[in-house]
Length: 55
Image 1 (tube, rainbow, N blue to C red):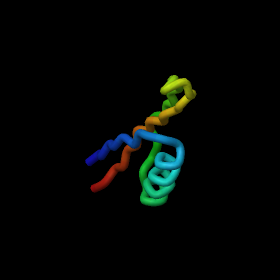
Image 2: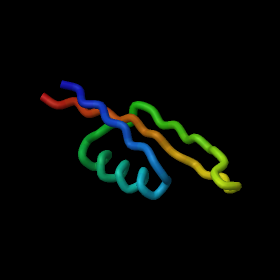
Image 3: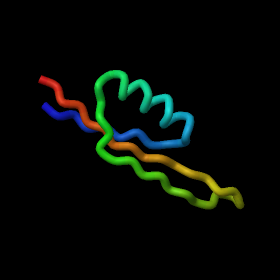
Image 4: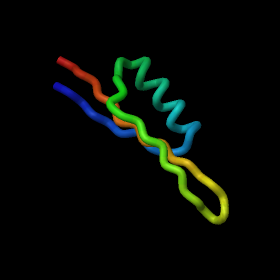
């Protein structure tokens, strides 16, 4: 069976979650970073899709 998950959010959150998932055997399918203006400040959000094959 193939499991697919999505992690999305700020840099620190995504880094923490991604590190844990990669250590648990997950593989990155795709990664995208979006930049947008929020209340006059530039913000960024990263979205990562991961997969894990289990028997």
